[in-house]
Length: 296
Length: 296
Image 1: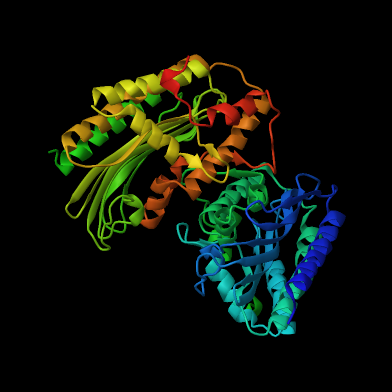
Image 2: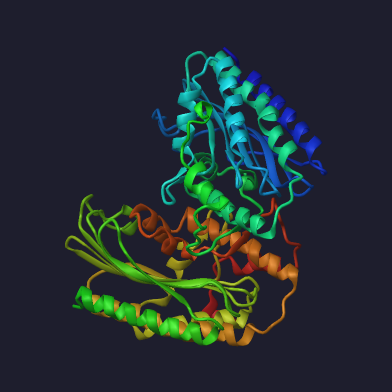
């Protein structure tokens, strides 16, 4: 069974791996802030990109915090008594590129200890604005490989992702999904491997979108549609996302918690794209759960 | 005691009064949508401004809906058993002007019946970006007059407003406050008058900001600061606002509920204005509760 220290170190390595990859593809390097958790012990390393040619706003955050009362949002499957000491460590990232053709991506791997209970969680999901079907299928196939290699069930974790990244008030998913898992107990070594495998797969999962799409020219209307879609991202993160709610409830470092928000979001009253347009196809097809790996 | 019909008609008159006033000051008239409440009976009249020379995005919404189960967010003071039939009617508005010198304003008056219980609620609050002290004092003095005329305690409702429009994760108020009241039972005639008095005072409350500030030129940096501050408005509305949460929980008309969101909001990682600048003074002085009517 991995000890907490090994898990933290393993997660830091994942953060480094992903940050090097993103630096290679962005004209500017990240800005790093190391911080302490004011309400308990521990802290984190926040790395953000605020400009550069690829990334409009994004960040990769590592944290390992210890506190005296785990917020309920951290565990929805088991009841953790109030006042239970906890350790929460993880890596989370959100990248919002400038281009409407390079999807926003989110990934998170995490480990909790609360009293006698310990578990892993994590996931990755993709939010494209102008999706290309083959690329989405390829993304899901790569994820299926990660699951297969780690002895985890892709179909199950894919379905959990579709359920989780869903905006009931809009009746649409946040994006084209990915995988999501939580409360993984029992064989913690295997689950740690799963989390790490996902972390190290990030490069292969995201590279195709960067390399194939970043140089495609876009119109002002397409960029505006991206900003409009980012409003939905904000809605999801502030209303439903358990990670954000956990951060707010645990009185974490607010700039690291809200790092996930885009640089700019638009809202327009009752905007409805014309049927037949790519903007309409996005909500009509891509933002409903699809069986990507069994698609012709 | 006023009957529900008289209250609805009274609220519609308030909506009309405010909409005429706003139309006079904006180069374009509102767009109107009448809608039905899909999950029960009733519906509403949503009027929105999407452009024009004063208003960047705003709306004044009237609704009167009946349903079979009042969401808990509607009543925090008394316990309404699940499955209690309810009537909820009210007027709510949010106006986001283009200019950083004309404050965003929000107002809401509402009436609920749930089983045997009936109560009024409401409030108004102002969110300036570059506040002018005398104007803020004048705004609060006008509100004190409304309270005095209606036999209500300004100091109490002002304090409730400061408590309510507060973002704990930012440790700042949403704006410079106003008044806020809820669960007003007992002498419903008086409370109805209070709600109407507030509604009809909107013109006098908002006119000075429009007339004195709308033509003042602003820089691109000042406009960007406004967009940044609008991020906080989004954070408050999506994370804390009971009206928004009530709307989402009661599965109301989403475009009317989220009408309160600005057209554009910016987020910047760890942005901190320089001490001594107006941007710093905003959070350092204006976004902390102040005793506006007793200020020298």
